[in-house]
Image 1 (cartoon, helix red, strand yellow):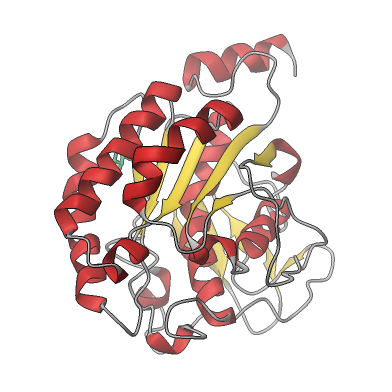
Image 2 (cartoon, rainbow, N blue to C red; image 1 turned 90 degrees about the vertical axis):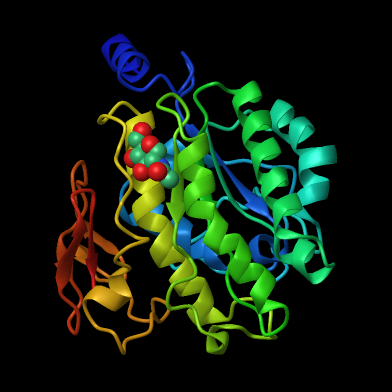
Length: 297
Ligand SMILES: *[C@@H]1O[C@H](CO)[C@@H](O)[C@H](O)[C@H]1NC(C)=O
């Protein structure tokens, strides 16, 4: 990295430490992070955006129980998804150590589902979220935080919806310029038909999670690399892509292999700072989602 680039990164955003060339992203969660394939398809989107070589997924786990395959080849297996674990326990007993070991620049998390299954109250869960944010900021005052809305389950859905109802105000109240919190709306439009077993995403669910995380994560990575100012929240919460354009359409995993220079369906095809291909495979067109992200839909 050139000195000027380092200087720009420090002065504009202050995230990536001097000498560090990759942005460290920690996927944090439970089985919905561990035994699913959205991490692979999210990595595909980093590859297609030309960012994968500058990103390091971090965490103590590196398993691939579902044998997920990235369409672009292999993906960075590291993560901090722990099947069956509660947000409350992770906040109280584990997160501090993981942060100390892996020093992420960005943490993206989906947690609370197991807490709900085990009868924990919404307030206790939100207090655990708050404690996690405090630990993240103690570890890195410039931590960028992405909180996913929890996906539905066929059981205990009221408790899950209660978490999602709290998240917007919770995030606004804890937000800060140095350590912004972004919401990835991984819940709107998520139907129980996107669950393989009542709890975990099937391929459609993985695709929806990937689709909603991508426009939140990619601008944060670019900004961390010094490519821009702190992004504003993409409008995923108020106007999810699948609902604004084609209400009846559900996301499908990337099935069509892109030819060089063309972008697969649901892939990125434009946006500020994006340098990749802009042509979409036939059957889809490039639509602007926000200033930072256009997608083949
Ligand atoms: C947090 O602040 C950033 C700007 O620093 C903003 O883009 C984002 O939308 C805010 N998050 C929430 C949940 O309001």
